[in-house]
Image (cartoon, rainbow over all chains, first blue to last red; front, side, top):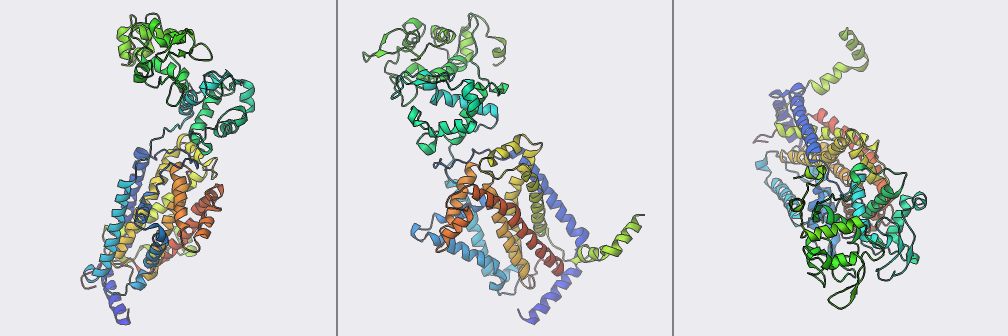
Length: 396
Length: 219
């Protein structure tokens, strides 16, 4: 810019200033107003949208789809258009040039004009870049697949509940529902192994959370315990193992007091009350049956994870539960440890394999089948001769 | 009484002169787009204040980082609010700083005599992005961990010095406690220091040169 243009600019600017306003209060007042609006917006976002909960970092969970912060998405998306062999062009060369051009802009753009009509090239280039950034960002948002939902256990109570469910599925078949251990029955490869109790105070006082975590994560192969952590060939994420540890600690350790909202009891039945799948059977099945009666286990294909599965799966489907006839139902016969010959002429063992289910739960199954296997609490209530205990009737 | 105190202070601090040079000066009449700069500054101050509060409870180690944030969200009085503001403030700051840059560009305000103001401003935009990148890892959750893994990998593809950059960012070949520590340090010391210094220069230049005017058709 030559001296003449500089002079001309200064003259213009001085004129603009003379027609202008005072920095204080005119400009400051506008600034404060906008800043205040942003402040309110931030409080609103923090209070009403909040920060999405995310599971803890798990270096072993390589299935996780990485997503950068939204303002880097366009870069991420742009890289998809760069062939792998010249990846560095997209990751280093182009961004590098863009950054340098941005910084050095006043020295690159020699056009002395400021009004947009006299700067068509510069305005066009910048507009294309901005539109490109916005377009790529939108494209990235649309094409990034949704992250698979993971159940997040935040509070201790939530962790205990989640841990109990996971324990029932992955641990209970050998360690038993209360961690009491004993002889393993019906587990491939470990048949007849004798397992010590893991819920005793000796265990609880001498094993730290970290030790328990490591045992579940890495397993103890010499003792027959397989690894469960994703990093060691298992299927549990770190957060899930932590939940199991929390469940063990708060349920079995006499020094820890379990939060009240974490106690998931199986409601007892009163005389004449009919149990439902929703409230009673699902809870008992989850705690005592599902660890074997799920996909991938030896169970005559009889799954017990849902209402439909209990009624309709397995090679003996139709005979496992017979509405109104508990005595003829295979489920009841195995619970009573009677010999049952299945449709493949093989004997079905007593269930649960290692020891009897509590009498009250056997009775619960019997009453449920007798009444025709009601699914919801409402259906069960309609079949009952007495009203369910007060706290349950509170729910419609 | 107050007049006496003011005069005593003014004699020593030169308050009148500061008022005259900084606040009581004529500037061109401008529109609302010109509030984006001060809005960026406001957001930076907000990030600073909420960030300082967060460091009182945050622990920059892989074992504790996640839990310490759980505690901030659930255990600390108004912790959720402070973190919420910091979280959203980060996104908003990137957006506002970017818009501020666009305003400056479209009004041609980076031209003589404001070249250095633009230079510091563009560096400030980059530092703001750096704050976003380093801050993203600190919660040590899945999103943070994997985004940083990929982000540092991308930095590692630079020809020749890529491996060095990758190792320098991660403090080793893998993402680890060292990575978290250096991202934390960069996030609370290095980058804010750079931002404060550049903002000082930026502001000095704005006061010295005055804010730019909305260009007329003959400019």
